[in-house]
Image (cartoon, rainbow over all chains, first blue to last red; front, side):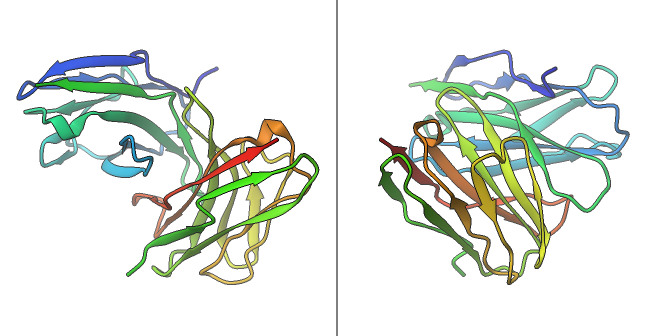
Length: 116
Length: 112
């Protein structure tokens, strides 16, 4: 079974509008972390935002916020006031467990295109 | 502060050749890992390390070896390259399990 599911292969958004990128996850571990990364066409992986499973509030970082719905096992990324530079691939990733490992499991990604 | 440095950026190998992808970080991170990214897919974990002298397998370890003799370096060895190993390889490091992973620029490997 897929641990991380991103159901939107591609999305368009108009510049200056908000957009939500979906991510659902599957884990039975009570302790986990959820990450979002951006990959522009140049190929590097850029960290955007992190949400821990015990965090009481939704994470926010500038124009990025994470809509964390624990019961539904969803961790959607919201980008407000889209900019042309937001055009990129976006990956949701999960780390399970409290052990000392650092294993990130990635979804297949969503390609976002921002229209001027 | 260079962050995570991967070399080379591009490489073409013939089937059966071996090579080592280098990864170095200067942030004193204990956690390091190698991923591969294939077209249309997210990153898949190959091997990871939680400190010098400690390594373990990820989702797709076959055909790859790693070692971690120092905190800074985490090389990935392809033992006998196969066309199925054509991919983009990323090295990453992290300070802790609840902080973000920093990624290198990637190595685009083609096996012919």
